[in-house]
Amino acid sequence: MRRFVTFEGIDGSGKSTVSKGVYDRLKEMGYDVVLTFEPTDGFVGETVRRCIEENCDPVTTALLFIGDRVEHCKEIREWLNNGKIVLCDRYADSTYAYQGAQLENVVEKPMEWLQSVSKEFIILPEKTFLFDLPPKDALDRIRMRERLISFEREEFLIRVRENYLKLAKEKRFVVLDAGRQVGELVEECVKEITGD
Ligand code: TYD
Image (tube, rainbow, N blue to C red; front, top):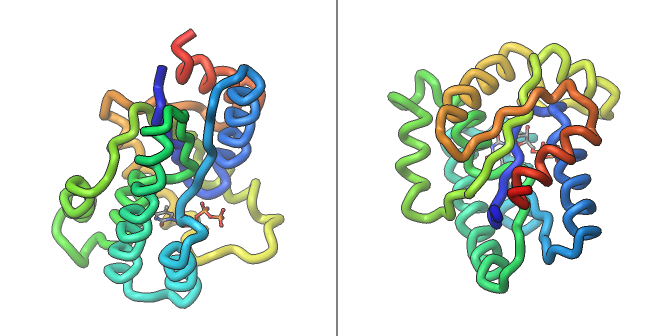
């Protein structure tokens, strides 16, 4: 049984829809489960969203994302201690992949830097699903959204995807083709989580 599970992917990869589906399915099966997300809706998370909108310096944004996560981990730890399964829509790998891309040419080896800043403070997920899709297809899916934020550009998302695929060499990752049917993806994630 995997108790702390994260969902990752570029914007438009469908991870929010699938994570909601997995949450509903696990609940139906009688599991005690929590679905949470990052950036959080706490005040640090709100500040991060504002930073993205206002195009703050990427160092500021990166450190705030990590701060938001440190606060979030207190809640996650409590849920886990109470025996819940915790599903998280975006987590630390989003920072490594997105801010790793933003901080290229700002710090040396940005992904390693972000990982080393984070590792003392965060809980490591037992399983991470990476919803993988070419950025062009992902952007086609979200073009209907009202307003695209600065991260939702193809050249940028190409680099983010490359970073994700590098991270996915770690054993906890399951890389899924995000072009597949939502129902199928939900079932596969549920199987991986419950170990059936
Ligand atoms: P997202 O989950 O897509 O929020 P919403 O549901 O409001 O669309 O996250 C917003 C953006 O923040 C998204 O482009 C990914 C980015 N992001 C990072 O750059 N680093 C991070 O650590 C996290 C959690 C998100």
